[in-house]
Length: 103
Image (cartoon, rainbow, N blue to C red):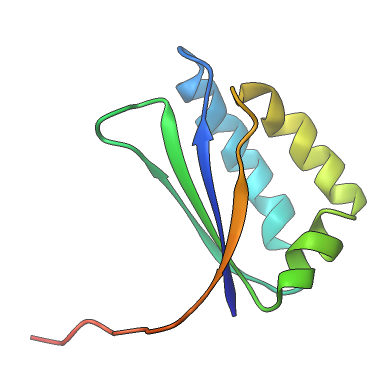
């Protein structure tokens, strides 16, 4: 399992539009082979910055499968015009996973 990490800076004043577009786009990525889940979080200190974390089975499921697909072109059409600058995407593999203790 790998985690895709992207820090998304959206153009000022477009955050509400971006969230609406992302709500549509999430069905595209969630239908892809190897997709395990995603989290989109909004920065509390800077409302125009979002953190996107996507869990993939394998790196290639993202880099070749998703990015090489027709569906990715629709993802780009829906979302990429909001970004300034285009985000850097990095991939991480788990070193430690510590579940929360039940109380």
